[in-house]
Amino acid sequence: MRNPLLVLSLLALSACANQAAKPVAVTPAASSSTNVAQKGMTMGEIIAASKTSEWRTLDPENLLVMQTARGTLVIELANAFAPEHVKNLKALAREGYFDGLAITRSQDNFVVQWGDPNAEDDAKRKPIKTARSTLPSEFEIPISSTSDFTKLPDFDGYAPEVGFSNGFPVGRDPAAGLVWPAHCYGAVGAGRDVAVESGSGAELYAVTGHAPRQLDRNISIVGRIVAGIEVLSVSARGPAPMGFYDKPELRTQITSVKLGSDLPAAERPALEALRTDSASFIAIIEARRNRRDDWYKRPAGYIDLCSVPLPVRALIFAL
Amino acid sequence: MRNPLLVLSLLALSACANQAAKPVAVTPAASSSTNVAQKGMTMGEIIAASKTSEWRTLDPENLLVMQTARGTLVIELANAFAPEHVKNLKALAREGYFDGLAITRSQDNFVVQWGDPNAEDDAKRKPIKTARSTLPSEFEIPISSTSDFTKLPDFDGYAPEVGFSNGFPVGRDPAAGLVWPAHCYGAVGAGRDVAVESGSGAELYAVTGHAPRQLDRNISIVGRIVAGIEVLSVSARGPAPMGFYDKPELRTQITSVKLGSDLPAAERPALEALRTDSASFIAIIEARRNRRDDWYKRPAGYIDLCSVPLPVRALIFAL
Figure 1 (cartoon, rainbow over the protein chains, first blue to last red):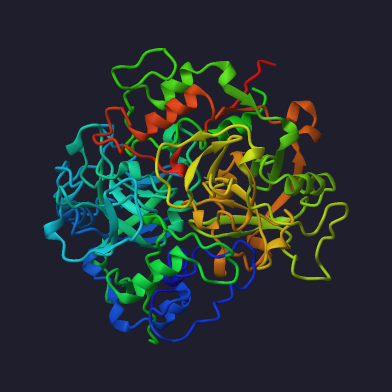
Figure 2 (figure 1 turned 45 degrees about the horizontal axis):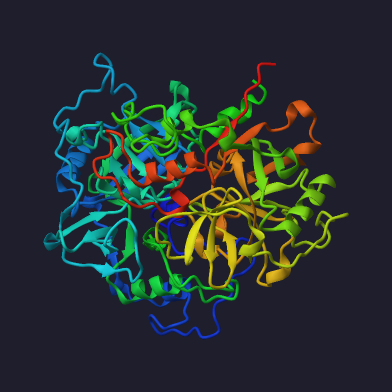
C-alpha cells in the first residue's frame, strides 16, 4: 500500500458515504448484475462494475498536499475555473509560504479556514516572497472555455442549471454563457475582504457543513478536498465569533503545503476520480435520485447538486 | 450566568452562523433601522430588534439533556411529529437506559449515532426495562393535526412545499394532506433496521453534514439539537464502514440522558427559540434569501430549506 494514510482518509468522501443509520448490512437490490449502469444497481455495484477508462488519475501537478499536526489532506486544484489563483497557490506552496502557518478558524456547519494568524498585523505577518498578494476575482468563467458538462436532471434554486464540469459540481447560466463551481461540502475557496479583489489564496477555507450555496459567485473557488477532509471537519469549533480561535494554543499548525509533483515519487498522492462525464457517474446520479436498496421505503425522485457523491479512490500498489 | 456551557454552545446554531470567510467585520446595510422586519436589515439586526413575544421558551419537559465525556448537548423533542417515539424516549431517559452507553458512530458529512454498542449481542445488550423495544414508524403526520405553517417561498425538490411548523423545518404534500420533519443539520432521528417498525429511540442519530434529505419519510425524526451540537460534529470519524468505531476506546461515553424537567431547577436548560411563525423569522428568511451586507456582491435570490437558520438563545439570569 503506497499511501496508507490516504486510503483511510478516502472512506469519508467516497462510495461508502450516506448509508442507513443503523449498523445493518444495506442489502443490494435484487435486480443487480455486473452490467455497467444497469437500472436498479446501487452505487457500490456501479463502482464495482465501472471500467478503468471511466476513472481519471489526479495529476500530482494539480494537487496540493497539506500536512498538519493532526493529519494530512489533499486538495485538487480548480485550474479550469480559477487559473490565476491556482498559479498563485502553486507559487505560495513552492516558496514555503504555508509552512508553519495554522488552521485559524472552525465554524460549526460552515467552514474551516487556514492561513497566517498574524495576517492583520503588519509587524508579524509572514511576508509573501514570489507570489502575488492580491488577485482579481475568478468567480465564474465562460461556458465556452469548458469542454464537458453532465447536466443534473433536477431543478436547482441557486442557478438556472447545475451539473458537473471538469470534475467539479457547477452552476451554469446558459443565457449569460457563464459557469461557476458550487460551494458543496469539501469546496476550497480563497478568502477575501469586502473588496472583490482582496483575495490571493494565502488565506483558504473549506466547506465543512451544509452547502453554503449563497457564497457561489461571491468568492473564488480554487479547489476541492479529495482526501483527508476529516482533518478539518473534526477541528474543535473556535470559541470566538465566526469560529475563530482566540488563543494560539487552540490552532492546529500546518507543517507544510507542497505541490504533489514536488514530493518524492513515493510520497505523491496516487488518486483516481470517477469521470463526471462517464456512464457510471450518470448511473450513480440516478441510483442516488432513487435509492433501490431494501432500507429505503420511499425513493426521493430528486437529488440536490451537493448530495451527489464524487467518488475518489486511492491506487494501491503492491510494492 | 445560569448555564455557561450552553451559552457557548449556542453560538454554532444561532445568529452568528454563515458569515464571510475572512476575519472582517461584516458591515450592516446602510438602510438599517430599529423597526422590526424592515427590508434591508441583516439577520443580526432583525434579532436585535425582535420582540420578546416572538420567542418561545423551550419547555424543559420537552428537552433531553445528554451529558457525555466530551460535553453536554440538548435535544428538543418533536412531540408534534413523533409522539409515540417521544413518549418512549422519555421512558428510556427516566429508566436511565442511555446512562453508560456511548457514541458508536461518526460518518463524515452524514451522521453521528449513539446507543448500546452491544445492541446486536443478546448476552451483553443492556435491557430495556419500562420502555418499548420497537414502535410503529412515525414518518409523517396529517397536516390537519398541525396548527402553524410558515411556507418558504422557494422551490424544493424533495417535497411539494416546504417551510416551518412547530419550530421544525418540514416538507408537506397538501394533496396527500401530510407533513413531515426534514433532515436538516441537527435533526435527530430514531435508527431502524430494514423493517419499518424496528426503531424505538434506543438508538439515535443526529445529522452532522450536508442535509441528507433522501432520508425524509424513511425514518422517524424525533427531535433536533438546540445546543451543544459540536460535541457530536467534531467526533473523530470512525474507521470502520459507515463511520463505526471498531474499538471500544474510540467511543465517547454517555454519562447520562435526562429529561430537562427531571433535573434540579438550577441545571435545567433555559433556552428560547425564535417562533417560526413570527414576523422576525419571516424577515430573516428574506434577509438570508438576499444578503444585504457589503461582503455579498450577488444575493442568491433563493434559499434552500436547510440553509434557513433557526435562532436559539440562552436566557441569562443575574443570579
